[in-house]
Amino acid sequence: MQYQAPANDLRFLLFDVLGADRLHELEKYSDATPDLMTAVIDEAGKLAAEVIQPTNKAGDREGCSYDAESRSVTTPAGFKEAYRAFVEGGWTALDAPLEFGGQGLPHTLKFIVDEIVCSTNLSLGMYPGLTHGAISALHAHGSDELKRTYLEKLISGEWTGTMCLTEPQCGTDLGLIRTRATPNNDGSYAIEGTKIWITGGEHDLTDNIVHLVLAKLPGAPDTTKGISLFVVPKILPQSGERNPASCGGLEHKMGIKGSATCVMNFEGAKGWLVGEPNKGMHAMFTMMNEARLMVGMQGLGLAEMAYQESLGFARERLQSRSLSGPANPNGPADPIIVHPDVRRMLMRQKVLNEGMRALALFTGHQLDLSVAHPDDATRESADDLVQLLTPVVKAFLTDEGFNNANIGLQVLGGAGFTTDWPLEQLVRDGRIARIYEGTNGIQAMDLVGRKLSLKGGQLVRTLFGVLATYLKDNPEAPHREELTDAIKALEEATLWLADHAPKDPEQAGAAATPYLRVMALTVIAYLWSRMAAVANQQLMAGEGNKPLLESKKISARFYFEKLLPEVHWLLKDIKGGKDALMAFSDDHWAA
Image (cartoon, rainbow, N blue to C red; front, side, top):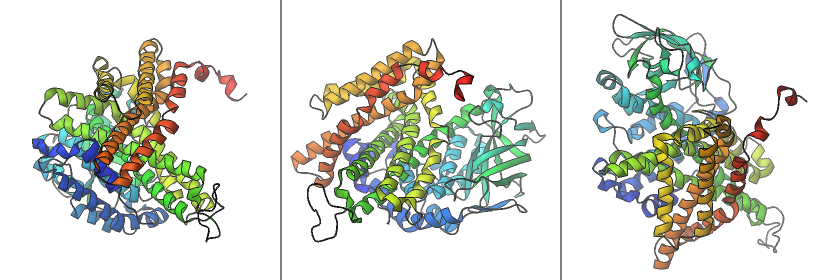
């Protein structure tokens, strides 16, 4: 079926719930009027459905191909044309800085476009997606000369970018990297080493590819404190010569087959330092945090497409009769959407998708406030929330995005297991999002090991302040009692970690994943209460889209009755501590 961008839900969230229709009142985003934001949503949906989606299935079947002699990679048929349409439409420049040719629009709109593109072809969306992270890292940490050399062409989409971190012997533990950077006489560095799993490391969509590479300088500490960041172009802008940075092969993957995932060999390639020596991790985290938010949108995008496909199937597939009597008496059977178990699956997809979208756009809106609001305190509070929620968005949206794609396959039954329907590809494509840009277990450890203690615990206090203020200002808030219980569970879990983690880091490790889920479910509960409140107000006033508003009230009820109670057994898991996890000795595993 042809994809339909969830435009009604997006407008409801942006304008009625989050207040993002007022972003144009901020000087930085003066062009971002509600009319312009609506146009962006509509045009992105049209491009995705008409240009990007048709390349998805063929791209999965064909995949990328590697030529060993030329060390070149060819993307699937149609990718070059679709990428060109994306570039010519200005989508690569949407929220990029104005001074280098960007449009300077809110980051929230970039989140939305990421979801829409990844709903229709995740593999294709990876190429401009990683480029955007390279743009942010160079803009934040690069010298003026590096910015002048690279940013305009990256922002226009004429060039693409990569992030080169992982090596055969190390992934998360980047202190183990062996790639070296030796100073040249001209201010550049000779980069030697091998990187693996490099998205877009080589392809035929653009003439030049700009690699951001982590490497160690001579004499640098052999830990993460000795890592520096370098920009290493495929084609040297100064001379037009080929840099000895080449693809040594493609990874063989279960999904995202249209995305070129490369082994990259740097054989004395010229590179230039980004930021300060031995401060590469600080610079790279600018790119990684942005990539983590983007990957969260990938999970949501795939979940949305899976929901649309499974809903369409359930409405048409005739099988058995309704338990309450024939719903289609003139036909041989009823559509399977009448069956409670099918509805349970569809409702879980729909309600979680809309809740995850609310969480993502809430975070995107806070990101915009953190960089554009004139009040210092407002900017700081918004930044606190963005830092705290970034690992939550990445992990929860990809966990539940994959689960929802898997549920969508189940709705289709045997048809879902065949390549005649798109669900099996969505499941395969979605699995990687829980792994790359830091596995979801690493996201959970980042949350409990770093974010909870930052600024003396201020980040999580800011979140609790938002939740408490909402309950105080809205005594009649929908599902107030259930939301209050969830907040108490999150508070109790936070206090348990504060008491136990400093004494025993393994307690933090054992609690990290369930704690992240408690936080995600609680913040989404807060947002579902807000959505239901707006729906009630508009229905009482006779305003708005009545079916949408009624669906919001029902969906909120489903969330609070069927999904939010998970926080209580998660809290029990957290307080149970590490003992059941860590008690096995080496002999026990194979017993």
